[in-house]
Image (cartoon, rainbow over all chains, first blue to last red; front, top):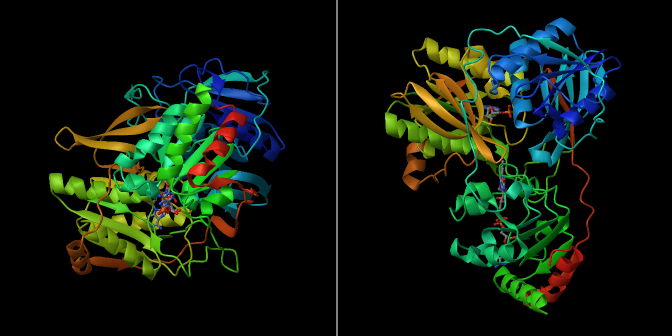
Length: 317
Length: 256
Ligand SMILES: Cc1cc2nc3c(=O)[nH]c(=O)nc-3n(C[C@H](O)[C@H](O)[C@H](O)COP(=O)(O)OP(=O)(O)OC[C@H]3O[C@@H](n4cnc5c(N)ncnc54)[C@H](O)[C@@H]3O)c2cc1C
Ligand SMILES: Nc1ncnc2c1ncn2[C@@H]1O[C@H](COP(=O)(O)O)[C@@H](O)[C@H]1O
């Protein structure tokens, strides 16, 4: 049984999450692993470890057009008859695979952390609730359509050696109607929450928009990004772009400092990638402490100014 | 313009999820219920579009009889009417869910109601299958854009401009209506239901449908909790006097 993998890339270099999808494909399929590569820079796909043939789709224009990508995949599925088709569980991977599943009327298991073939499809483990819960499920249909949960699989080696075959996908009318018309860059400055090495977040316990000054002060001293919980965005104290969690931003800093945040599963779904967690909360029984490496129990309005002051002193001496 | 929003009833889990004895569901005996924040934003957007451009908004759910609570919640924030596809409480798989939604939309069209815009959440809060919107759009042969965080009508409400987060920036799409869009939290700041809103919601029209559940092709076998962090927090202190210990930790981590 062969596998077909949708490889997302930056100018031809495969994304990490796509290398993870390739490694599931190699483990899942006993035959060849082939890849589909589409978009700007796709002519020279690089470092597709373990891929037999990289099929490079030639589309009119280079802008992302999810229906055309789905059409390209469906065409190859018809031709190669793979037993499994895998993409990364990224925004684009999940989007395109949902369209493929809809076109072929096949089941799709999104964000898998494990998958094995069975007689009539696949047995999968997949992520629910942003990673707070795992589901064992049976998928019935062929090819099995899967996406991989980010960072659930090791990356396939970036080795070379894939044969390259160009093809022009057969498109239906309307397959190019949905396409990216324009890209707007992020408004300047500041530390981006998703990439920050340190994040200091405030929750309902902060009390008001103005009271975030103590959170901002500590963040400023540490060169950290400011985050918050959903209780805070719902109260209008901070914009949603600051929200950490299942329906906010997923962060992976070296140090995460949640202050006055209880630790609801949906908040924790956004900070599982943090290497160290230092929680500040007035309630010693708050669930956040179960995920913390370091705990400070107390009123954040006393604790945060004291920490900022102590940092300044330590830096002076 | 007519706008339809699809929402799903899910439990509000707090700091810890507890599974039912058969490990096929969350133990909800002590929990309240809600919908995904993404879907709350979809409902808010539908209300605003109808406020600005006229027409009517409809909320639809597929779920157990108790899911009427989530429909009334949406009616309380200003949605005009509701469609309840009533199930026996079993979770329907994505193909079955999409199929039942499409059948309801076809019945609506046969009865003279068509929707210029159909809104979904980007993913449901619990199952997160990332696919119902795409399946419904395909069945209706309408353009579909996922993960939308900004939406504005253009060309005298004949088209819509949509923004999707892409890395640190935004990708912009333009599609003609009718269209199907899935949205993410951040699209807007949803209003809270008012007391008069709640009272009005009780009298707003709600229609039910009870289709048969097809066999699942993505069948849940069991649920499990991922291994806990296993962490034992080091208590650095109480109140302001913890500050020196915090500074020591910052120094250990090379952050001073
Ligand atoms: C589907 C879904 C998705 C969600 N997505 C997200 C998400 O992306 N992000 C998110 O954050 N939430 C999300 N939520 C909401 C989540 O369930 C919680 O409601 C939310 O995280 C609570 O925010 P909080 O911890 O700030 O508030 P609370 O739970 O009210 O906790 C406040 C905490 O502050 C402490 N405190 C109070 N005063 C002080 C003080 N002076 N000093 C120190 N400590 C103090 C209290 O002890 C308490 O622990 C989602 C919910 C659902 C249902
Ligand atoms: N049972 C349901 N009833 C109504 N709408 C649903 C249901 N399940 C999913 N949806 C809609 O489809 C979106 C995507 O769901 P999913 O494909 O499960 O991630 C959700 O945010 C809802 O808008």
